[in-house]
Length: 119
Image (cartoon, rainbow, N blue to C red; front, side, top):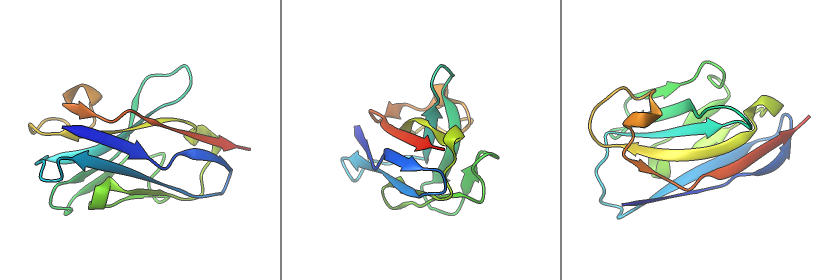
């Protein structure tokens, strides 16, 4: 299984970006697809996750109302970006049902894509 994250970039505060995570093979079955980010000098943190059915979506408080995750390639629309959103964003797949907020529970990871938001 491979995950390929894309869509990062350098933007100004208030701008938008959309991240995508392509899974290979496409028939790969997962329970949740999540996004995590790692700000400079900090630990990896939960951003958002979506259940395989698309029925349940979860967000970190810091991004709720600004970020939206969708099932299709786990696309994550990020609006009204802030400098504190800067970091390397990783998509990850959770196969065995566990706590979705803990990155240690995710079995597969993409390579990360850099998001930099300037003030």
